[in-house]
Image (tube, rainbow, N blue to C red; front, side, top):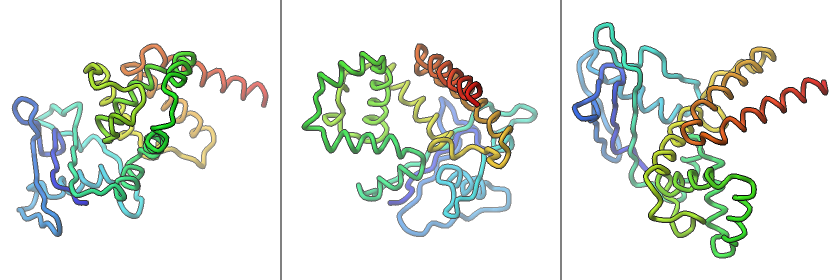
Length: 239
């Protein structure tokens, strides 16, 4: 497996091209690649962009900050985008790689669905999803698995090729959300040694996560937040 293409939008000195094109597109080949350029030509930005996506071997905590957003004069971009394209990845390499970037639970779900694809009772599954009110969540994550993770369409229950573009857009938002927070939030900075600050930070993350998920699950995201708040109240009352 190797990184074949890196694309940057509004990252440091690289802006955004016309019609939404990346400000920088770099192609790598398999093996050793060397970046050559003058000082302040953007070499470090390329390396750091890759580090932001893949993190580091040592598990060093790194975060995007304000200076990473491209600026023109006094105007700073509100968003940035880093896109990496990998080639030569085998099925054996894919599993630990997807877990590394924060998709462990989703990949476990896909693996189980694939293993038991011939024995699943689709009718019973649909009945239970509708009974629990989770059909919309299933549809979005199914679209995410098929269109973003390469799950075979025929192995994904209740997913159909003619699913509309709205589901695909929601799946894209889920992908961005997972890439931002990581596997159960491992990309976030939380002071675990301070009980009060830890609880306050976790509550804040839950609220902001709900706001983001409103665009994906407008009916269910508020319910999840209310259930979380109610569980917290019961925990405090019980001591």
